[in-house]
Image 1 (cartoon, rainbow, N blue to C red):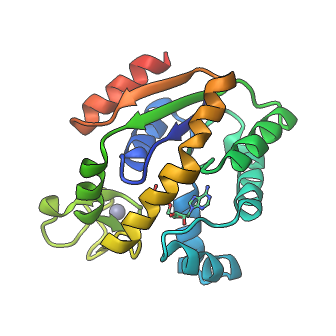
Image 2 (cartoon, helix red, strand yellow):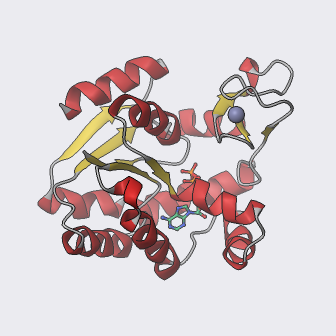
Length: 212
Ligand code: ADP
Ligand code: ZN
């Protein structure tokens, strides 16, 4: 199954993508994680991307399309995948359609996770991520800054783009530039809408029941 997981920053795409990835046994491809790993390794891409990400801005389409092209050509993408964080612009969505056709990777399912903006701001300002496995958890579930998912010690950190001013910018860009991607998909594909408020497991169940 090829799934495109769509939603605002902080809606829980990453969390849901990881669960779906293990239940459906297909890889989770997160462009945010790919970029953060480039930052960690201090590659040219990472250094350039960090400047934009820290301001809440998008990395240019050509770069992101190149990353996705390489990733979808990898062996692990052969039997399906969950895309998280891509496409984020209509231009990216169009390129992705072209790429999927070229690679004989149709059809796909588009899942849009929704929730209101207040909840999003609350979640983004109250979370930390694991440096080791990218797991995300709310501050009130953190005990000794070690990761409940992979067990790494002192591995939790607040993402540099989870600061209030940057969050505002990310939401602005989501509304102006990323939301139109859904209108684009609504023209040709069926978009599956899933309400993203509630318990993590309930939301995964909702998604899974609508996928099959
Ligand atoms: P979130 O969904 O919580 O905003 P991500 O981890 O998906 O976070 O992305 C973090 C940042 O990485 C984005 O704000 C953006 O700067 C960059 N980024 C990720 N995916 C893309 C993309 N498809 N196009 C452009 N920039 C991207
Ligand atoms: Zn971890």
